[in-house]
Amino acid sequence: MSAWLAVEGLGLTEGGTRIIDDVSLHLAAQRTVVLGPNGAGKSTLLRLIHGLLHPSVGELHWPQALTQAMVFQRPVMLRTTALANVIYGLKLKCYTATECDRRARQALARVGLEALAKRPARLLSGGEQQRVALARAWALEPELLILDEPTASLDPASSREVERIIGDIAAAGARILMTTHNLGQARRLAQEIVFIDSGRIAEQAPVAEFFHAPRTDAAKRFLEDETP
Image (cartoon, rainbow, N blue to C red; front, top):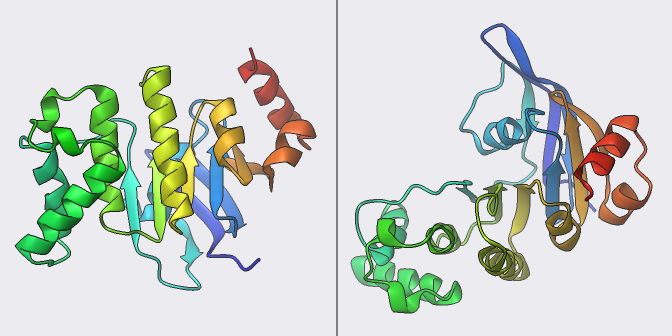
């Protein structure tokens, strides 16, 4: 399986502190989940990959150009309707107004929110707002969807719905790169696990191998601490 991203010697220093330290990895799986303890650098690594942060050292190599979208733990909702929030992203892609409206409504239908299209987005529940954010990303038809703790603040029912949508986006052909603290979610969604500890990649393995036979002491401790 050929890699769709190669990271070589990536590092990020802020305020004299090395947050990401000499990270090198090749990503080839369609669905990759980044795990690690709090403060390990998971979110920072995703932001570096997406281009929201610039590395102090190192390089990212994209063998092929991939259109990307990113969804955060707490989605930013514009002060307008759910439909207009989805249309906003499409306008930046220079679609016609009619096409924007059609694609936005289709995206909301895919996440089960067509009935709330005209509802003010900021009055929606946390789970509904996250589904609007996913619709906004999906409408752009990204080849890579990056998700930073997409269900961290959601109740179990909302989390299951978000997982379903992520699965549908992957089934449509998008690559998924995400972080989560939910080990059950990682098992369900990942093909591959990247484990990061103290800003360094400690382990990279297929999901079953990581959970059943972690190679590093850091990964073993993490799984023990996070398993009820």
